[in-house]
Image (cartoon, rainbow, N blue to C red; front, side, top):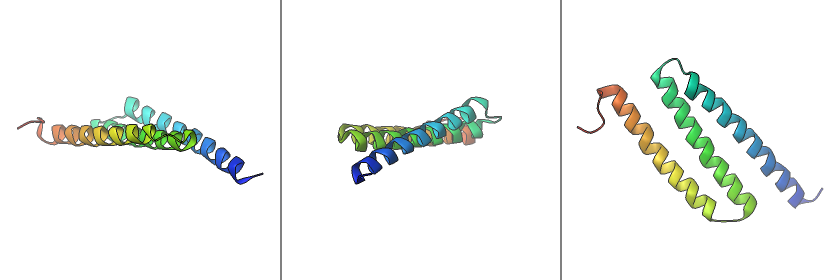
Length: 94
């Protein structure tokens, strides 16, 4: 097995594992008993989506996926902070 075949196999394996982690995060997002669990599921989901985009960008050798991952990361962080602030204070904008 050559190095390129091994790299391709590792990238496919990591995509499968990240997709499985996204499925578990989606389960927590839907079935979370409390709002905090749902926010944690959303946070985990966007991080896994960002990593899946990065791995897909490595596999396709395209920088467009890295830029999309950066946007997903920024929007996910802002949404997590806004939801946490809403749960603590009851309002997002003071």
